[in-house]
Amino acid sequence: MKNYLESFREEWEQIATEVGEIIRTEEKSLGISTVNFQKTLALHSDLFYSVSRAWARVFYFVKRIKQFEKELSAEKGTEIRREPENFGINKVTEGAVAEVLLMDKSLKSLVQLKYEAEETFDICSALKEAFEHRRSMLNNITSLVGTGVFDGSEQSVDDYKSAVKRVRSKE
Image 1 (tube, one colour):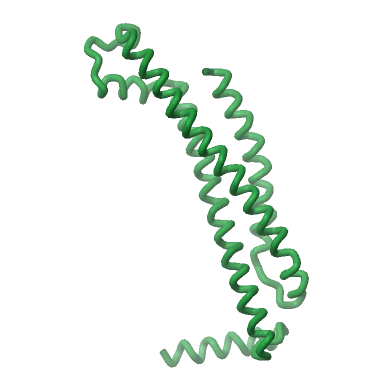
Image 2 (cartoon, helix red, strand yellow):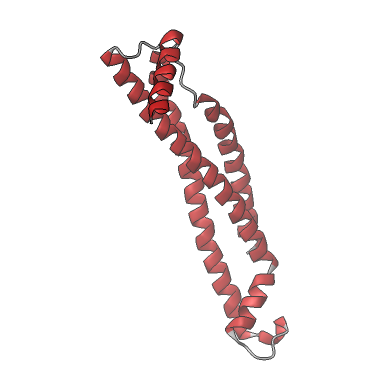
């Protein structure tokens, strides 16, 4: 089992490094530039793909580690039930087995690794959702430009913000 744990740790370190770089790079691209709007539109799908790919890598790593955690728990549980005296158990109960499993160093290490991966997964999910929101905003701006309400200039942005404030103040 130690080999599997080391293998998971090594794989996670590689994924975490790669995904961490993607997160740091792509979250800087969330803003929408009206100055170079065509470039912003053109790059969006590449950015979204990069974030989605990172999300998928972490998602499937978490899935595999959860499955391995179940398998390792089952294997250790069988071992505990087979030879309870080796684990300081006089009477085998599910509570006693669960307590020994809770204290198992291999499982603790695996669970810690799973939590690290789940945290990164949550960050990737938030970033992916932010890029989906960005897409929606790009669509909205494109519609506004198409209707002539918004031309993408800084003055247009200021005018639009003023209009939004006026509408909100009337509510």
